Image: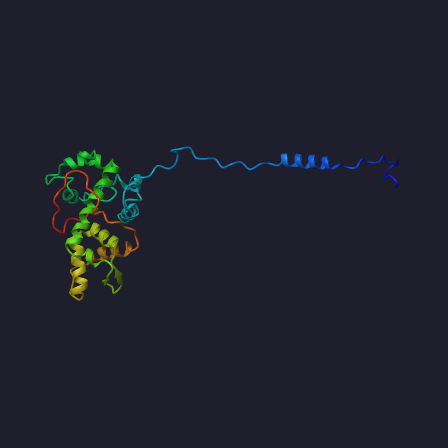
Length: 251
């Protein structure tokens, strides 16, 4: 067999590669390939710090309340907000009468021992303390649940009512609690009685405005998750609950 020719004359014959040479080349190529690096593991304890309302029960409901009150859009998630006209305080816009009802303030405006156990001895303390505001909200939700249970509103969950404009409204616990937060358990009960028993009865401008606010909460919170808080213990000594019709929190 003639050798392979190269320019200028005869080229020397090349040695045939052996099987060992092929294995060596393959191993060398594989060693040269970049190897995928394992994903970096996060350091223990590193990550976003939960915000105050995310550490307590009904976090989604609380966030939606703050959004409805327009406080969530402010700095510090609204915890430092004060309504200058109504005096409503914080992320959930607690009225002074509401803080009185849940046992955080006295009739003469002083902060109670319950509030002080949460580090609150002044309005400034309350506005600067997200954890205290969440504790106050928990107390308020427990109270409202008892009120709407006593006045019969809670028993209507699962039913439907015809709204002021003819729209059908499904009643859920989250909607009922949210409506009571806005206008009080008493106004909620009056609205439900009006729609069920005397839907054609005339309303004053003030009544209509209040009922429209109730309806807005019933509609907006229909699908919001809510877990009853009636069985959760309240911090501090038990306080007698007032009869249904207590003050609303929304300011």
